[in-house]
Image (cartoon, rainbow, N blue to C red):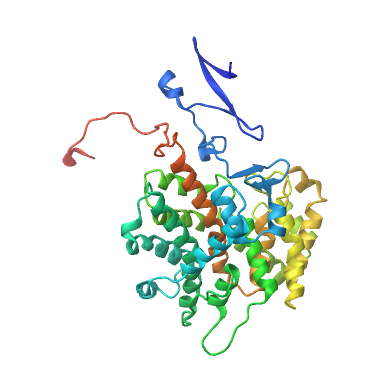
Length: 428
């Protein structure tokens, strides 16, 4: 007999099944609790609520483990490419050489976007944030492919998936080009995924532009590290919107909007702003951390994580890569030295150790982006670019799940009880 949990409410006892995942995670299934008892559970922020069963990504925050489809993030960052990792996340297995070649070819063939989209950029103010532009234009793809949008048609879905992954770098790069008043640069079929977006961002018709291999590798690795992260805010948004059978482009547009929030995808920008402030004031890492301890209004950005209570495994990858990239391109930045000081002091200071404030992925990613010339307002755009395969994989998994239902959380109502309507003339 399966193990059950017992909930005692007054004189009544309710038995709730206990489920166990492949990595030993255990959950109490409350899906029938309201039907049996009239009760619901209350969990603000869903911090302790599982919304689904998923086979895509495993996280153990206490031990600092992140795996896509069973593969450790450290191995994928070292040995894989972003498109290979995307295939893995989407399909559950690493591709054969033939499968990867076919997938890469399909993505390459769809990188161009409809010429009418070029005119859509002109509808936005020049100072519009690129995330707003990217979200709107991803949603607009549904207007260009109206005959192939059915989320329950496998052929339509596969075409949508490839179009979205392929066209997103073009959409993102053109959002940047528009904001700085430069002519759009078309994608090139002879370039890889990371090389293409860098070329579209930084090339111009007046001179040749060659993407530095170390920079392309760094971007490819960053995209891998961002490819999925379980049921975070934006992924949950992707699933929730998709649960209404909204099309893939509309769901992805909503997920991009969720990622834009400073509490989610904007954290690496906050890290750069903090490091810049420390450098401008001429503080050492120790001096700034002392201020953090003494002043509740001074925040240590890039440390701590909602899930990880240990060193973020993605931050470990980036820590070693950051200095390598800067040396390869002949760049130096005092921000990296300050970051290293902050990490060294924080990891040895009981104040931060007791609070489990370890560096997270945002701590180093912003330094890399800035060093290679990515503007601060494009940091979150690159996050969205990397996260897209994960969002899509969750959207696909949800539609394939026979237990899936339209998302509809409950609430505890705390407003006024029933009262009579008063005529306007009698309201004091």
